[in-house]
Image (cartoon, rainbow, N blue to C red):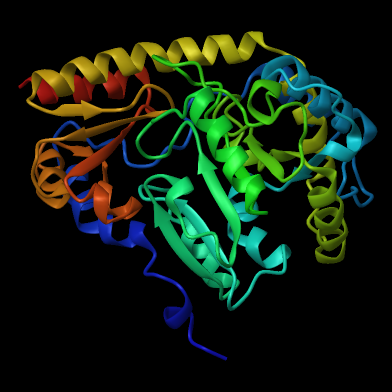
Length: 365
């Protein structure tokens, strides 16, 4: 068996430790804007649903309860504009990261198969390809890829880390190209509820897919929209010909969303008000941080959606990282997301109002 180091890249966040120590030594304490983990409370109606089903001694099902599937199909139609979505079109998963990491393996990909993902991307897309021992390629425009051997095309809109949003026209063009070449499109749409200067569109929208879900799967998470990162709550929606076999594989693997989490998801997807409240929190934090970064000489690119500002001072991201760490602010270096990010940093909005304001004051100083 090959060593883990031979199959996987170095876990990137370990490289941040020296900078984290520097930032933590600041007299006013660290402002950690490096990881996009929610800090606000889980809405009470979701907590109540979890507590009410805490007495769940039996095994849950991988496909979830009928109530959960009803909640997912209803949300997909209401929020994404999808049509004629049935239980066969949806599949709960145990958080979206495990899905991203293991999807190539669960699809049966391996040597000779190729996975493609954006040039600036969440590192787990590459990790998933490596775990399956498949080939992988980063792209600027997926329609310029050589489709030979390409089995899985990842889209990510809104993007992590850049916040870039693919237009409806771009999505339509990409979906048509992928179908022409028999390539499965999996669209990571976990930040779709967080559009600021753009209105993100799902690949499940009929204007994009022509009313057919063939060859399309969308990934959605409740971690950011509902502060449920600790609950591990996400789901897939799309082509039943893809989701059916995945369901069977995940049954064999015991990949079950816990029963209390399933009940919490039903409550979360049935309520839009808590999402509106959380959006307002992030919008206010984004305004404060954006103005402070621009005032401190940063340039911000894309960032029209998601929970991050993609910022640069036109220098090495590690130089910027050290500069901010000296001021007690920790951010993520852009090269975590690919060589094209070497002069950028990703600044997360996931900190309390007080910490965001503190970061802004330090940047102005």
